[in-house]
Image (cartoon, rainbow, N blue to C red; front, side, top):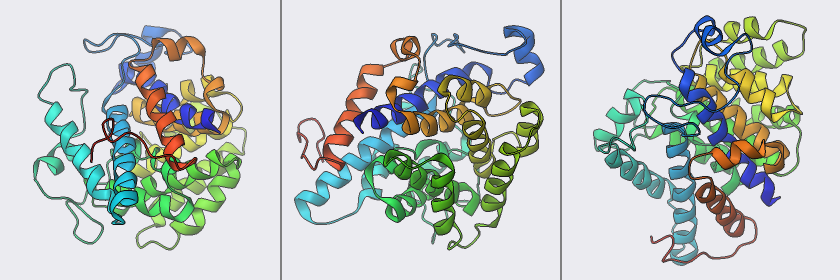
Length: 327
């Protein structure tokens, strides 16, 4: 099972790094530059070397560490308030954006929400944004918490910066899906289980309809480029989730082609690649990810270490060093 934890974090980072060079480009432009199959490997982008990831992975790792800190603090104090720890890690990330090497083109919604000094919630909304920045950072939640709890915590973490239901409900949905995949469930089975809780939330209709549309498209013979275009560009939460689900479903047994399908489209390629990578990486584990991608991936050893620590803490119940994760 530890390989599923590694697969989740490495998979999301790999999908992110593959998509980052072609974000904002049309599919036509992508194919003009990289050939008829589109981008197929890590490439340099905007001053960063091949294998460098974007803010999606930076914030996903912040989420992972925030979950570790929150859980360890609960074990020590019996006070459960993981969202505060995650918010703290997001603020630390925000402060790091003053450094040119750290700034990986994050969304304006996330930046302005964190700059405000207020922590958004589903009750006290920080804005009305449904940008995909909420869902792209919550896959690690599914490695930390079980089923319904993963969904609810994922919603809380996304609502810190995104106030529209379609900004935070996809995050909860993805979080619960990761929990089921890590436990050995199938993709379609995980989708079905996660839909049950989604339906109980106010404002779920838009997200649910996109999920159903993605699932339906994956079951019919249809040109993948046209299917993805039909689902949208991935700039908003429900579209990013739907595109990732579609690509994962049509390449259920093939991590490489799943993430390549998710990044080769006219839209938010790094975000859709990241979510797809998290899904297929968790489903199949680290061994499904091409080894040369892992070795070229920025900070891959640190990503593996965080995955191992999450497994030790959340699955084996081992407390981690407070020197390593000070609360």
